[in-house]
Image (cartoon, each protein chain N blue to C red):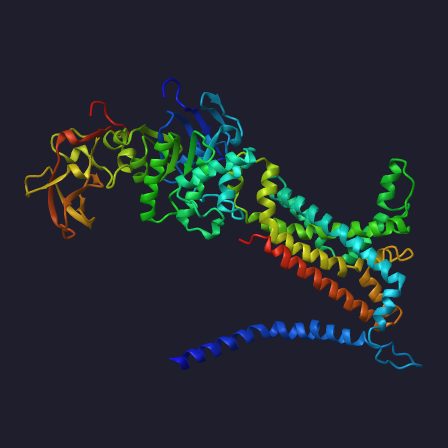
Length: 297
Length: 340
């Protein structure tokens, strides 16, 4: 009897490990090992012809903290995240609510909203580059109709980051809408009817019933939006290259520049580790704090 | 109870393109009564209820509740409550929050809210479950939460859309009694949709039998059982349903109409002495009695009840008889003939 139980248990264990191993292998190869290696290389000095690489501990980190550009980039990215995350979530929710209601051209509306997601970021950035171009661009042409002066949206420090933010929101909102739309369709129709009979207004129904039921989706989207606010930088290469005078430079772009334009791998590695640490902490807060207040069906 | 009926539906119709909705629904409901809308699925009983609730707006006709024309009013303005088939409880809210949701929305003061909730939970026997989520309750408990939510506000009209269909048979019987008692104790008017005639017949003061979007008969359970207005009602109401016999197969009747007779009025007699000579098609032991299904050309649904266990072999020969005064007569269109 106990022999059979043992055998069964061992079989379960083998089965479990077999299921785990593909993901574990790939993650180790492409996520865990690179992270550790990055951390390791962030502790060494840059290898130049005159001075070979040597262990310098946290010196690379100290350099970063003393670098005003680093702080500017951090500030830019925090601002970028603080605008793109809530605005794209709010727009996604509004679009999903509308696309989920009984409107005549529902299929068209849904497709239209989703189109930006299908476009590659580089293509989207090129589109927007055309919109933003002073003189020729669509924005300027529309402005000219109302007698407004030409604005170089991407070329001045005051507007460059905003221009990048708008492209990101435009790109992301449709993608998040799909998740909201799917979640909305799992809410039974009769909850709305019950709320109607109880005398709840549309707004009360949204606030007291729909939003709480969408919380798991919101949480998921929030984590995704946060990660995107750090990792989605393709459009910077086309639109501003981080300029003018670093006004639209985001952290990952700076890391890329550090590593492949200035060939300063150790500082890039140090910055990467900082970003990873911050992302881990924020994701942990989101999952552990908000998760407890979320109703899962 | 005097004066105009509490709820009036006048020639109400609702059509969906191509699909059959309801037609010519006219119905008076007295205050404090229990009315059951009964019929096979797709007969329009749920549609009628939803029209009354304000979840659908009729294409034609008029709906009055308590003397007020509410034909196009929003559901929230009709001062009624509803129990849904699926209960429609809010899954993320606790039992207490579910029950007082409507009171909160209508800005009832906190103290009054607590008092009404305590009473509703007491009536439905849900004390101690206040902080549970619907997902942590059994089907019967969820059903009671839906009931508590329906009665907490003290609305005088309560609509119920097949509230028992998700419960098992045993629970259904006890909840049926609870609902009836609740309705009588609170003195509220209940409109109850069901496809189960046992529920309708046992609970309702008035049964509305529907078919294909039209009302077939409105009356007391006694009316429907003993004086069906047409063959559809005769065959729908009662278990077993009324047997229909072509009049030409029975001696002493001229052909051209249909006779109806209930199983309890049919009796088995010795060979050669019966009015019909049939073969046994099935025998079903029901506990206190045995239902024997009979075959005879020109009849449908003919059966006879025998006390206790008295199974008969399939194909056996039986002679049956019945008294003329127990017969119902219908014309060729299936309408009940006057004077029978």
